[in-house]
Length: 320
Image 1: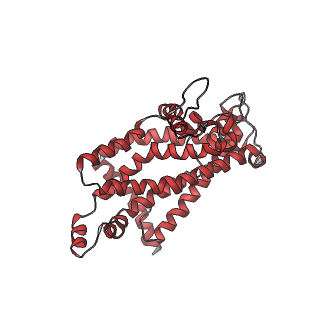
Image 2 (image 1 turned 90 degrees about the vertical axis):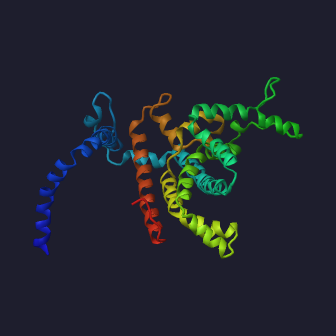
Image 3 (image 1 turned 180 degrees about the horizontal axis):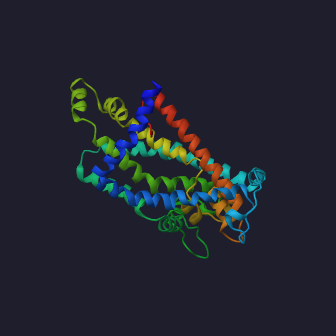
């Protein structure tokens, strides 16, 4: 057995070169993307060592002295980090519970629409917000939720509240409501992308399955739960894994364009906190921010591995 393995190892390089010569054009097509990945994805990884160093700009990354795990100890003792971590996990958990299930439900409901014109209109309306940048979308949200001041009528939502006899609410400055604003706006903004994935899976279902089930007396609910959902379950699981991988990673563009000092207690997330201590304001603590990013991305990788393994045990194809 060992001799056979050695022979295979010796044969592998011999087979590789003729294969490259034969398919050289395909490898040339792949080469620019591969080089781009090496330079811009793997190249900057040398900066990870900052998490274990005391950075001095005059010494550079490689010349700065090693401090071991001191930056990680400082991270754990930082109450602002604990607060930002808590807010990030809570907001992402809400996005998973409400946003993820809503996206699946929305795709199923769009798929049930039989009028093609109405279906196209709804699909376009759902997809449109995804193509807007968070800067533009956050500006629209701010105008929509604007609090009336100095004779101003305020945003549309506050005008409706006043018309119904209620008091206007400052949504973007209320710590208790800010998380709900983030979750709802994220659902509206990103629902289009998820529904595209699910609709593509739905398009691949064999129509004869529905026809056979209808002949056997199945109603619309039976078709959905016994044919549609099982067929798109792999796509649902992959989207769930991807969303769980970002459990400790927050949407910087969204939060940064909507939050303020009034809602730091519930709205300050890891991405905005890392930005403040490293680049924003007077923060230059690159070591601490690198340590935070290192731990959080490592935790996300662990979650992906365990979730993917769990999905495979359900006899559903995972990411790898």
